[in-house]
Length: 287
Length: 264
Ligand SMILES: Nc1ncnc2c1ncn2[C@@H]1O[C@H](COP(=O)(O)OP(=O)(O)OP(=O)(O)O)[C@@H](O)[C@H]1O
Ligand SMILES: [Mg+2]
Image 1 (cartoon, chains in turn yellow, blue):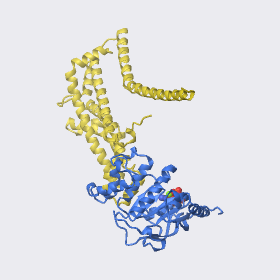
Image 2: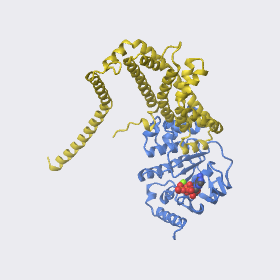
Image 3: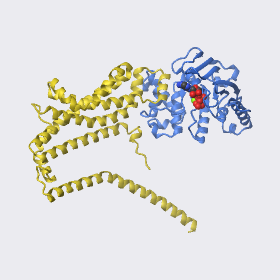
Image 4: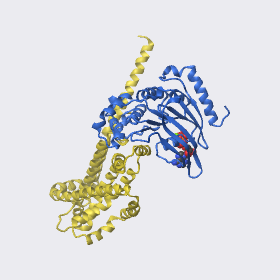
């Protein structure tokens, strides 16, 4: 074998090694993406437990993780029922926010006069903290459920409205010209051009709205208190607080957090499924 | 697809298609994008608009496609303009990223109220013409720049338009792809016998493609002169290296230099 051949092989070998190293790095990163946060969580819980035992902190001030876990298990029935109510309010409000937000965005897009008249009020509703509106709502709205839905809807619809509005106006100008040249009418332009262009924006707004809807539902529960409709997680947190059942407070809080994570993950998945075929954000290019 | 073969007629004998008469376009009261542009477009012509940046080439196309009204003057189609008479290709491929290749090409028909089933054969035929019949169900992001441009061209010709407007369609492509697309464009035009107005900055592209080169100058945008390239079609790679080609390119370069205000 000549020297040149040797070198050729050596070079080829390095390229392969490079390739393998890159693939390994990608694999490590994929695992690290979920493993690292988990490790951090386990460490935090262990640290928490250690602090509580080492300092002999009484459980009515700070319960250890074991007590919170016990509470999760023993109060599971109560907590699940509460989570069900909070989840239901959040979800229905989110659906209404999508219908209202996207519907208003389309309406505003079709009529500039409507937009000029009403958009400022949408902004005012958004910037006024829902906590300060909620008590009023429960004075005028008889049904607790309706009041809670209204609260959650108020905070959730704006991101859908504003991002869909932005999307409907973000049409590629050449495509817009093309539609004009081919004599598209208003409906065709909306259906075949503006709505698809707005989809990624809408989905971005939806993800934010999901989190806000949960916040709205929690706030509404705290303001509404209980009364014939069963009780949600936020109310359980408050109630456990009055009874100094701190462990149950943590358990309920964990469920609220889990619900928020679940909503975000579900909406991210939805977004990915709808966009993966064509949108840049869903691209997974190699290298 | 009906084929018209007026491009085999000599330049002087082709029936008229469209006429711009004394067209002015003024923006904001003082930017004269076009002054007194008169252009007779005949069936089968391949016209290049050649000129420096800002001489009103795009403005002329926008006026012809009725995206913009002239400040003065008129655009008249022989026998009036019917639906599907016009196809356009922009500098960017301008495809709908959420739609497949076939759906993109279907668009002009779809906007005219025709279902895909009705026009499927036409869509398949033009995709075959531009060599993309295998990519029917691909999304634009899966295609190279040259392939996207082919889809854009397929969409422009699918209604079998009488006139196709192209605004620097290949400017963003590499030279090899551009040559290939230039060759293919000429073959395509010979097959379907349409009329083309093609905007370009490139002397060589204009000489290779067109039989009429309209040289324009800027500030104010205006037609300076018209050159004819009488080399018969089909033109291929041999034409690119011929003395004939070089002579035409020299004449066009000189006219362009004059348009840019430099001594010839
Ligand atoms: N919508 C507009 N509003 C104001 N001025 C414009 C508008 N469109 C074009 N112009 C001006 O009109 C002139 C001609 O523009 P046009 O785009 O037609 O030039 P062009 O020949 O296509 O140039 P390029 O080769 O750079 O594409 C330029 O000075 C440009 O700034
Ligand atoms: Mg231009």
